[in-house]
Length: 241
Length: 259
Image 1 (cartoon, rainbow over the protein chains, first blue to last red):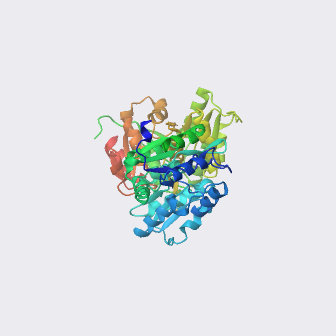
Image 2 (cartoon, rainbow over the protein chains, first blue to last red):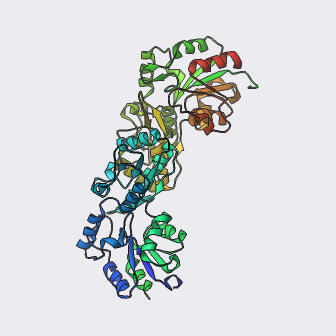
């Protein structure tokens, strides 16, 4: 297969590739596959749009089901977003999952001048979105961040709305365009590639989302591989050949 | 200047002649003045929260003299569509609007999604239910797609953003029954036997009221009340026929220039 030639680095999505959202066991073969990449000295980074929990809790979850990556190898949107907020002097109004709040604890949130939308799940209420809308409309230059651009994901046996549709809702209401932090944004992938230390053309991104993972990676010059569940282990094996 | 004389005046309600229980500057007297002219008057509204009965109670309570037959709402248009296509929709509409749908089958097995302005029902769970139905092929019917509306003190999200969210998630386009759809404006004047060129629409929503009406060939007069925000008139092309401070001035324009 030509897509797996000259691979010097691998980016992996987490949810839907290593484990299923809501599940408490790894997807078959995924632990072994990462180990084989490691044994073959192919550096791996984990690129996730997970914002329903803190990076720490995500890591705990991964470790509890048998993975052994370190915090430095995991790239979720919230730390990247906090960096942007600080560097631009922005104070966010947060519409995020309560379990992710503490990752924003060192960002000034008084007198907010922008809105950050994460995968807020039950916090996607009319009241919360309306507050965000009213703040955006009161700003001379409204700034809206969306932590990822996904439309939906699989939770248990059902498809569930992701942050993307709610970001579209606020974009439509306020005539603004959200800045996406996370996949598929180029700057997000760029930061991970820099950490990986490999040029985009030598890197493969593996994920289950055609837009965020595959499309995003390919528009950055990487190769994108979409997994179907039953094939995860197989694809991981061929990558390192 | 318009070529033909105006025979019918369409008037938006909330944000144009009233906000909640408050009359907007001299609207009652201005409406009387308009009625003393030889024109048809029809009130066209995207209000999805309230049934026609609620609306009439509110308007007559403020002191407007308006008859049920003079009001054409997006709920009426939605009901017509549901009946015509024999649908059993999941109804994400405010409880007060439900009486407009009396007799429509409420079901555990919906084959459509109807979405209005329902702040109490726009939550993650309901949005997911709607999303899954549409994903399975059910049509999405939007009573209208307004971005926001004006409450007494503040702007608040309309149904449009929630419709947009579902359209984006499912890669579908909703069927809109209210303003700014051409069919809505045309149905509202059907009984008068006049051409679109003989109608003028007065409203505070530059896209839904003015843009929508002008697309059918009607004239549009934008009022700077209600949800109007500065430079709204630049958002549509061609621009509104006229932009005036309020309903009173809109009536002045009609009486002095268009009749």
